[in-house]
Length: 305
Image (tube, rainbow, N blue to C red; front, side, top):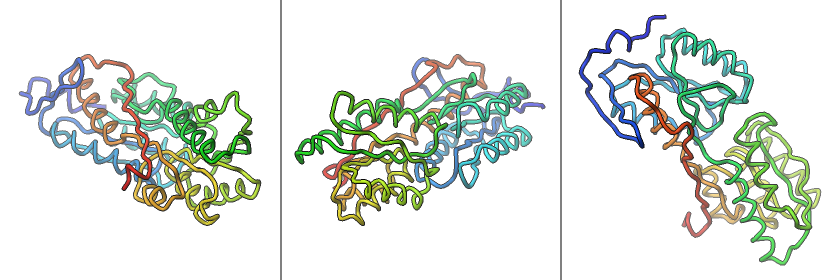
């Protein structure tokens, strides 16, 4: 496949940005870059798209967001293949699972496409990985829940987790981090229930946990968090619940007292810096570091209000 950037190496740069140890320059309309996310459902991806758009506009590159309508390995692989066939010079990929898309990424790599990984990583070499330290984020959520339970005088009981699936690296790490916050305590962490990040199914899973007498719940991504919050709200906000990701629905649930907090990621930063890393790689520049922790913050009712 003929890459457009190869034909334009001698052109004068129209825009230059700086990130860390490398500068980023691009010629107007020289590069085409695609963002491929796990699905198109969550506001999380919308915010990542906005970050990509901002960097693409500043750098003068062509950009498009491509995503399956639901979390599905085959559909995400099709998106990758379509980007390669469409002549994209680079892709930003948030992998639905660590291994399912590796063959497709290898084919993209062999075709000369630069690969940047954002949010949820695949087991394949890339220019750079940008995302949240998800184990740490999950642990912080667990610590918030633990403190709230102890404040209520609840020193033991069952705790449920609603997550996406058993393969997506980011949510698996959050699950493990959350559990780690309760090591050495008398709380019982139940088996995680998976609902593919669908808010309605997540609500059903959370309601099931509530009927089992759980004293606390954790939703490991945006859809899971909304489902957990809605179930807690229907139960009269009787139990402690926390989640991951920031959306209008999540923030409203915090305001209403159904969630004590959410761990807010920075998907716009992932997208913005990811585009810059891709352009730097296309320019033949060194991209460092290999991994960028884009940070996370705790949002409570006080923060939201």
